[in-house]
Length: 262
Image (tube, rainbow, N blue to C red; front, side):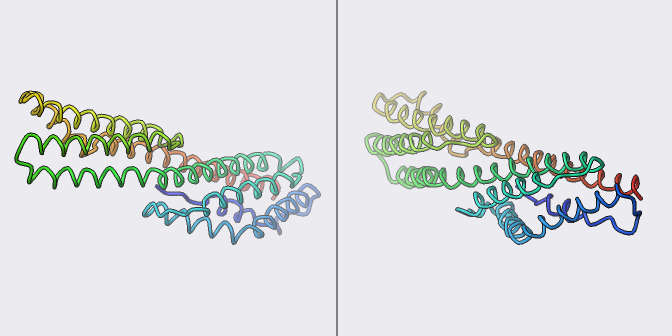
């Protein structure tokens, strides 16, 4: 997932439109852009730090603890500062577009903070489940009797139940809600499949053993959850691209004013 600070590029492009006319309207627009540019310069350092954090997250899902909430709060403050700049009539349209861009940046910053918080919270229960899957594999190899195999499956069912309960306490952000539901369904199936296998061993039910073991192998692979994660990433990238398009609209309106007042 990628997160770029499109705002920085857009606002930096709003340099003073000097040397292209001397009318009162042009002077008022120039002063507006000067004030906007001054606000942006005040936030240049925090924007650059946020960009580095987003880049690291996009490359490797590097967890950032407080960095993402701080970035979201920074964009809120920046939006408030820009909103306080009163545009002249000729610049009202670009001002509206800039505020729309800032609103999108704020929303995306909050979204990344939510993604980071979720990924950190779900890491522990899923890590516990992976350890249980490893114990399942290593425990079955030396288990030569039905009773021994039953104990291995029963232990895995209990571990999957614990992971499921912990995952249900994690609140998923909208972009990962599908992934979260998919993962919960997978872990629930793992728990039920392992419990069914333990019961089938007691009954010497060979047909159930074959079918449930095949299902367990598929769910351990977690293909459904992987597909859901990829869908969430695509949706997130689409929203980031929408922010980029808003930045392009801001720049296009600046260019329009240059031509109109030049």
